[in-house]
Image (cartoon, rainbow over all chains, first blue to last red; front, top):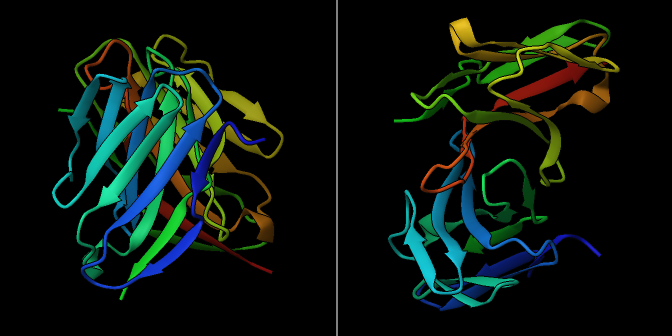
Amino acid sequence: DADVTQTPRNRITKTGKRIMLECSQTKGHDRMYWYRQDPGLGLRLIYYSFDVKDINKGEISDGYSVSRQAQAKFSLSLESAIPNQTALYFCATSDLFGTEAFFGQGTRLTVV
Amino acid sequence: AQKVTQAQTEISVVEKEDVTLDCVYETRDTTYYLFWYKQPPSGELVFLIRRNSFDEQNEISGRYSWNFQKSTSSFNFTITASQVVDSAVYFCALSLRGGSQGNLIFGKGTKLSVKP
């Protein structure tokens, strides 16, 4: 099994719909992250969590929310999807000092 | 503020040519980590290398080599004798040890196309 698993891998949704992207990890890391990738912009941080009770906004959190259900699970929600949220989304985990990071396979989200 | 700059947006080479991907970073921290990732057309991120700020030794792994120079805040990546399978987007990233976030700060990536 992969260290970091994202579901779904691909999703097409309509404008205004609520959608949740899920992430689970087997690394035992406390730190988890959600990134968004747009062509030519690299990966940008949406939210990050240092433990179940600690959730923080990243660079581009507007329009998104997250939930840390357990150490191993970190989900990203789009409450009302809009077309400019069409992107490739990555979940990641890291150790305490950021010396290593593990990424999920990515979720391709298309909002029509 | 921390920043990673990959000035080359796209590079196109012919197979067997050598190619260097540039990465310049900014940070005031003395302890940090630098990474390179490869993203093939399938989309996943493939870890290539991590280097900490106290280790300026260059590294070679097969056709890949990395040149880390703190004096110029650069961490460049060279592919020798490029192959079509090297075609991908390559990301350079920075992580701060003990930083408030611990996340990776990415450059915008360089798209490498290797033509047969």
